[in-house]
Length: 236
Image 1: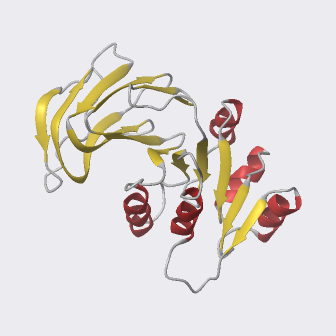
Image 2: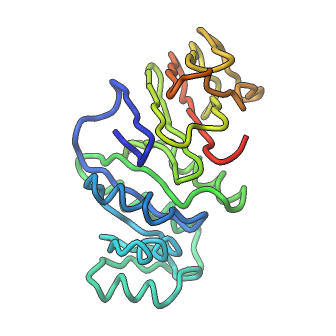
């Protein structure tokens, strides 16, 4: 599987199937990054302000969802008038637009593979809410979150992944224990490798690693837990 210039190789990645790219209202993906997913045949959904990045890229989302509190009216109307399906929510509700989008995803059979973009670069409370809403993945396969600056692949245990980078290579690579502690964690291809390590949610120290000289990728594994394999392309 390829996310623009980042290639992910894992025996746990499903072959084929329905792949949905959900564009949220945080830092917008740039047009070349977004367009690479159109070329790979991903299905596009836009959540509220995420529709603005879709219009800039000239890629019509199959579904546009939200309460229209942050989306440009012109961009929303463009999507609907061009044939995108609309799910308009009430502003007074006990769920976020993203959580309601996940309910729509839960209706898809078979379960889709889902990647989020427009998730970074905003408020901590938004990121915290969407991460913990996304991770359970009982009715979808949560792949991760990414844009042209950052990315995180969600690796469920037991599992392994090799992440290969084009240009630029990451300035930092981190391992994040998510949804509790992670057991049997390993990483190679970096300055500070790990072997069969316990990573506690209360002590997430495996951050700001870097690729070893000459390496263009990393190999990570986890025996138990959900491990976030994170990279930052634009700063240490």
